[in-house]
Amino acid sequence: MVTAEDRGVLESWVALLMLGLLAMAALIALVGSLYIRHEQAQAAADFAALSALQSPRGCAAATEAAARNRARLDSCALGIDDIRVRASVPSGVSELLLRLGVPPRFAASSHASF
Image (cartoon, rainbow, N blue to C red; front, side, top):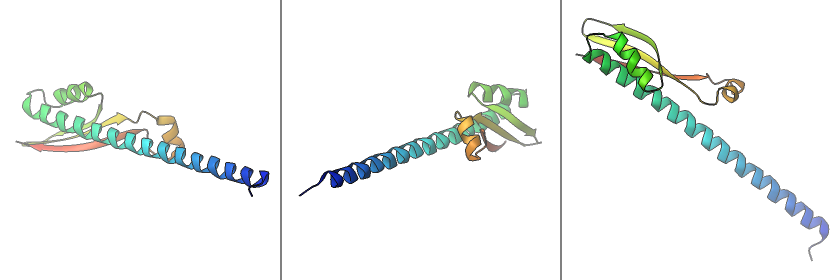
């Protein structure tokens, strides 16, 4: 026979389980968002490097290419036969990430040569 006390304990366990599932879903969404931002930064860096190689304007073309990809060009080093760029994109959830100790921007580097 189920008593009122047993029913209250069961409701507490169900509430805790639901809270745990909600926390897991939020964590999965956050990690997915961070992964997407990193991939965006990598794509922007790759596109910037290729743009710089194909244009006589070099790093200016890389800066424009990064901006078209909603990224910021952090560095651009044009060598004799290659280029190295670093681009970053905003994390999108900066305040939360700062509290967790994660940088507010995600950066990626790319290297291309002739």
